[in-house]
Image 1 (cartoon, rainbow over the protein chains, first blue to last red):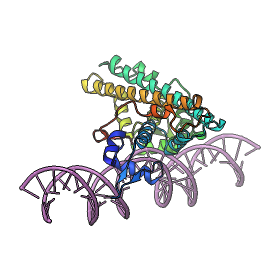
Image 2 (cartoon, rainbow over the protein chains, first blue to last red; image 1 turned 45 degrees about the horizontal axis):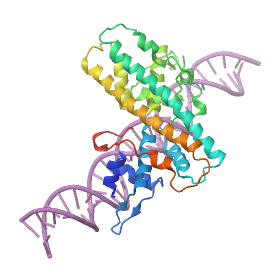
Image 3 (cartoon, chains in turn red, purple, blue, yellow; image 1 turned 90 degrees about the horizontal axis):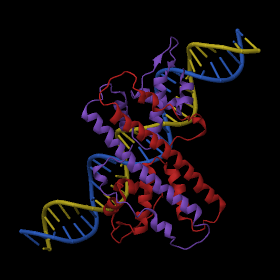
Image 4 (cartoon, chains in turn cyan, orange, purple, blue; image 1 turned 90 degrees about the vertical axis):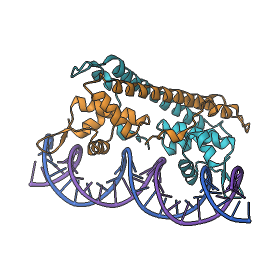
Length: 141
Length: 141
DNA sequence: ATAGGCATTCCAGCAGGTGGAAGGTCAAGG
DNA sequence: CCTTGACCTTCCACCTGCTGGAATGCCTAT
């Protein structure tokens, strides 16, 4: 299949797919006419990338995830612990996403029109979880 | 509180906080010495931004979310429906995040060492949910 | 008063795309 | 066969969202 169809199947714009090729995340075949040709496996990878990127994983993190995903010798403890570390990161994201959801839901449902200057939801908002230590973690991208 | 402390409280680097000010996401006071001064409300906003950005919402989306969050006249149906639309987006992200989690967990636990060229987990991977229509949605950033 | 650690601004550069021009390919209709 | 339109190609410039570094100033402590 050509890039246009691959774009539809994966949910990524063609430009982005070409860019991912440029940075060696994916290597589609080429037809005799020079057109890129994508197989089912390529589509899997692209969808995987679409998901991971839209959820805030960086390109390099995606590269790592892909290496897990493609590693045919997954026995190594390294690889396993890497996967589990990513699972933990995801669990954190899940918590934050649920918290954000809760906030918005509350804004939509509970604050319909009252204009108290200090809506309790706002106080509730970001005051729960400590993040600290930005110095120790690369903030995305 | 100064920017360094605000950085610790919010989980964002000082540079990023200054950048957010530059693009008018936040407007801290200034002390007599020219130092930025952050109050509790500023910290709430910054934490909100930190969460939303790390979860893949664009700056413009964050600006929108903030406008919900700060709108003292939330009665309008527009604002409410916007919040609910964002809740739906978040639900989608939650599903995708869970799917990604499932994938990684399975990679870590179930595929320990077998080197079948087509592990069933890989087939299972991205083949479930249709995304289609990237043309109709701005892909992040 | 001087050293350290914080703050300021400004400017340059990187990551991850995205838009547009200039041109080649392909299937359909005249 | 030839054209038209939708697709594909490459290349280059631009945009977003930071991020690092230099030059400088403030502030607290010994």
